[in-house]
Length: 305
Image (cartoon, rainbow, N blue to C red; front, side):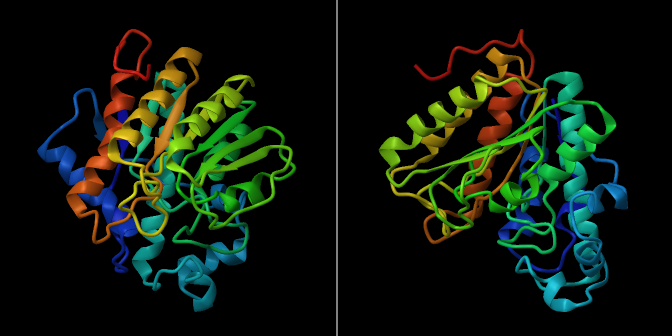
């Protein structure tokens, strides 16, 4: 299974979990590899890939730092290496999507995607690589329909905005925090869970809803910030075991449906209850389960009962 990463994913000087954790995970994989995972660098995005989704004035602001209020609208202090970071990280989403179409499953150590809007960033998200990848592959005719499966703690309001009116793209969103909440519309549905006991049922229902429709590709925003130790976003009672169960549900669903699936990291934050090592282990859950179910013949019996 290909997993995309480049040192530019962490190039920005602004130090925050979203700008640093992919490097922590890459270091972890170098020290303790996951069987079947091949870490490789993506090919950079073209400018047209960005402006197909985002306002050229906003793209220019991120590239140049001017105006600063727009370049920093996602919440990061701007510096010239921010452009390298977001260009590389968003490239990884597209590269993973291409690999998934060929090989069934792939991933990227990208995060900071689903809150970004057409003309500004938001919530630590600069560009929306999920929609960028979907629209690029639709434009090329590689796919005719794309599912964005969003299990971040926070609502994917940026994605919802960017896909309005494009019935080729659907979003199924299960969140535990109302941040970036949006009204549901024809191709974007939101379930907001406020009790940990209901979380896995909501995941099951979301997967059943997605399974009922026909898609050519799934882009999975695999947030670990529902974890009870994450601030912001965590929900008491959602433990590492619950999230491991969720990942088995997702990738068992993927295998049963034979739907090409590319995953990205999404949210996950250090707090007084969750240190760097704990956060890395949470994100490794996704990579490990995905690698074990990356081909139809690589069966596992550790899925949910």
